[in-house]
Image (tube, rainbow, N blue to C red; front, side):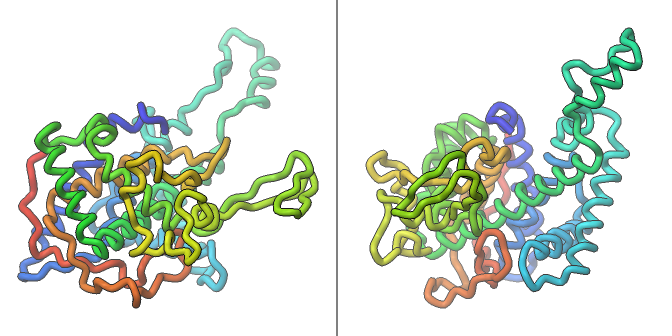
Length: 365
């Protein structure tokens, strides 16, 4: 998705975030509201993914079912997972996608519909003979139904779980350093004055440099686990080690960010969730990281990167407008227990926030 594709989605992203926080606020009658930010972020990103990718609205009573299915399916990526539960979850997701494909009558703007209704430049010509059309179909670049389903599953995974994990981490990092969250709140006060209630592409790109820096810093400190594979076109020598042509090689995102010469610290504190979290480094060319590959690099750069950045900034903006302060129930970085078997490392408790001081919802113009 290109920036021009993402820009028209921003009002819907904001409305989704607003609706979620509104429902959370009204569902708590007690004085103290405790929000599990990982659950909230997952619900937000999954809602965005199902709407923008599948073109389907998941009813509120089905959201928890979808969340659990996604979690069980992701478990298949890691050793020791409950394979039966994981495959059952995958089949559940496949059935939902197949049902949506059967419902589609025209291109509704979703990624799924775009794949279903894609056409080759030289589609069947009614005036051409059968032999010519058969030859064209053999060379078709259209996706089969199985390919569409597999691509949709991948897009849901990339469009929900990764963004949810990064947003959860943002909440943790900002909660551990309240002065950083205050800057985020102050930035939104300026955005409201300059652009009004409704977020726009201009507001996100020109009026929210600190929100952008917060997201990038979270992605720098805790990128997606692991790396990606590449192949050597020619024999190369790296650090005195020869890698022959044609060999498979892998790069690691975390190590790449750790060893960035601009940010590197001998004690590796540049990657610490408290000491290393410095969004301000992104606002100055002299301190901006030079090695940053959370979305990959080269021809396999993440196609959903622009949508991911937009939805994360929209969510942070919405939270900053509603919560004047971010108070963690466990404000210490020393005793964080990290969740195992997840794509983006997040605390096991999900980051619990005291939302007792949540503001009344604002009307989106």
